[in-house]
Amino acid sequence: MRALVVEDELRLAAGLRNGLEAEGFAVDVALTGTDGLWLAREHSYDVLLLDLMLPEIDGFEICSTLRTERIWTPILMLTARDADTDQVKALDTGADDYLTKPFSYAVLVARLRALVRRGAVARPVILEAGDLRVDPAGRRAWRGEAELDLTTRELSLLEFLIRRQGVTVSKRTILEHVWDYDFEGDPNIVEVYVRRLRNKIDRPFGRSSIATLRGSGYRLAADGG
Image 1: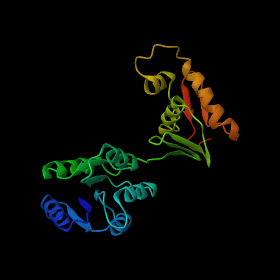
Image 2: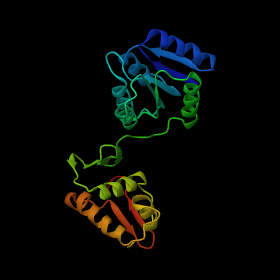
Image 3: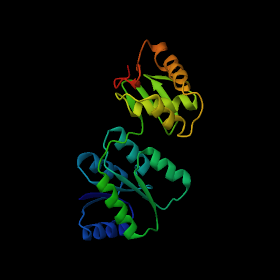
Image 4: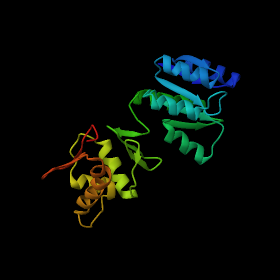
């Protein structure tokens, strides 16, 4: 297993390298954000251990850049900052896990191994289907360069469909995920919201991205229509 440690504290970086090598990892170390980003781009790693506060480029920017470039190496953020807002931002930027200093070394290694088992699975921050894009964390959506004015429920429905683009999903499945398992209202509410969504993401742009399959459900075109 190959790991990249991006940490500017020399003693901690050396300790992490020695400890991880003792656990069987092959370890590269970068002491600046610039070097860390370059290594992460140029080489294939099984996991990336990334400090948040770095010289030149911080951990947030490194993580965001890698995800934008579709580099899906699992990332564990390591930082002395434990504010909820920092943790939320790290995860929304594309990090897979977050650990604050001081930390238990045994816990660190266990989390890194868990990330390695998960592997480099695509987990884009911005969901895309053609020129249709959704930012779940920012609660925003676009068709091309035009931002869409969607309600919270419409945005949730679009996010659900775009995560399953190209797949037919039943009305019941939509109800269970966009509303909840215990929804007891009129199931035709799905038809109402699909119609509203079409009026906002398709018709103004001359598109038809959401297909109705009679008796089966709905399907969002993988190319965005």
